[in-house]
Each structure stands twice: as C-alpha cells, then as structure tokens.
Length: 307
Image (cartoon, rainbow, N blue to C red; front, side, top):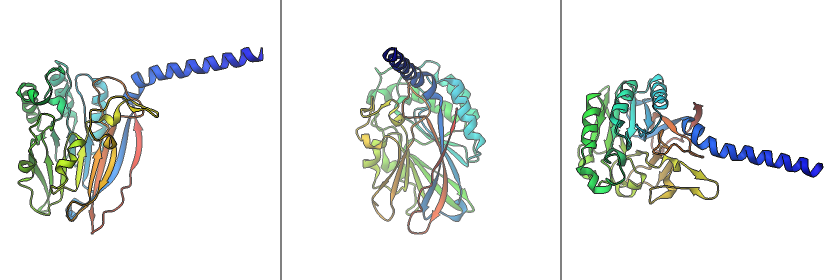
C-alpha cells in the first residue's frame, strides 16, 4: 500500500508537470509581460534632458500576436506618459491583415515627442519565409508599412537621424535600416549628428554592433532576439537567428571606442511569430535619462509584471 501510495503521488506530480509544460508556454507565458525601469546615463547630456523618459518596445509581430494583448501593452506604455516611445522593428508579421491590425494599435501609443521607430527583418518580408534577405527589398510590404506609419505620425528612421529639443539643447536618435536586407548605411545615418552630441542608436539586430561600434553613439537599443523566446534549461534557446548568441537579452557594456563607454540593451520584445515563450517573458523597458559627469552612473533596474 505504501509503494502504491508513493507511486500514485509520483504519477500525479508528473502529470501536473507535464500539463504545466504543455499549457504554460503556449497559453500563459506569451502574455505575462515584464515592465522594467532603468537609468540611462549619457555623457554630455544637457540638464534640460534630465529625467527624460523613453519607453522601448520591440517586435510587435502584429497579425500573429494576440491583438487584445497588444492593445493592453500599448495602453500600459502610454499610461506611463513617456517623453518618447521607441519601437525597434518587426512591427508586423506574415499575415495578410498585419497592416490593418497595426493601424488599430498605433493610435494607442502616445508620448510627448511621439513615436520613433525603425524597420526589422519581418517588416520587409511579404507574408512568407520565401521572401527573405536582399530579395525582400523588392517586395511592396515595407513601402506600404512606411506610408501607414507616416500617416499615423510615427517618425520612421531609415538610415537617418532625428533630434528632439529642450531649452535649445538637442538629444539625437539615429535609426539604421534592416541589416539582413543589405540596405543599412551607417555613414548616411550618422552624417547629420554633430560631434560630441548625446546620441542613442536604434538597431533591430544586436549582430549589428561590431559594424556600428566606432560610430558616435553611447546607447544602442535593439530587439530581434525575443530573448531566445523558448529557452530550455541547460540546452538554451531552441531557435535563435543570431550570430552572437551571447547578446540575446538585457544590458551589455563594451569598452570605449573613443571618449565614452558604449552600452547596448537588447529587448525581449512583446510579440511572436509562433505563440510560445519559455524563460523569456515579453518585455517593456522604460529608461530615465541622467546626465553623467565623466563616469557613467550605475544602472538601477526595477521590474514589475503585468498580465
């Protein structure tokens, strides 16, 4: 009887674990978003931008990601009243209604200085993996997406820079075109940024860092990796389309390529092409800018969950 009782308990526990392993990554984890807050020290930042707040989201994958979830996320971001919302690519996914669904989300994203964004690799693909790489630049989806974003007031940066002004001082944002398409042109993107300016770089794929490390930015905001999306203990991410797998999520500091240290933040994104997540929760990141006298102040993150 004792053995049968222990066997029964073991079987029940195995059943619970199996059920959790099947249900949680599919129906729960993709919709439990983490909201993190960070300080962003920038050397040479004007005091006019002290406490300037940036909301960073990435990889919406509108069309396949649950629409109700994206609406809730957009409302959560806007409720924080950020000065700017930054979207680092993959606005849409392989779905014929992606643009229509994104048009429902964009009016919900509200910030004092609006929304600034860049393209990701999915923004060039025409609903199918058959249209990837350099060939995808010949498709029409990214052209229609660009027109729609502009109609909704989004500042789309395609190898170009944008600045915002406070009390006569400027903060610069530089956005790179998608590297997988082979159209990214850093020289053109940084051409208008004054020497020594406070500059934040937007690059969809963290693999672009080696190519961009010598340019005059202090922070790079990225996405693309989904934090690994499905990460198994010991094994790691099941599918990760990156060369530098050490940069799949979080904050990275690099030696100075000039007068200042460089930092890269890789956002886990909020959406998906396949509705599965494990040990890689969707993420919204808020950055509060800080002036930095010489040595960068430590990063002080905090996190809270929303569902």
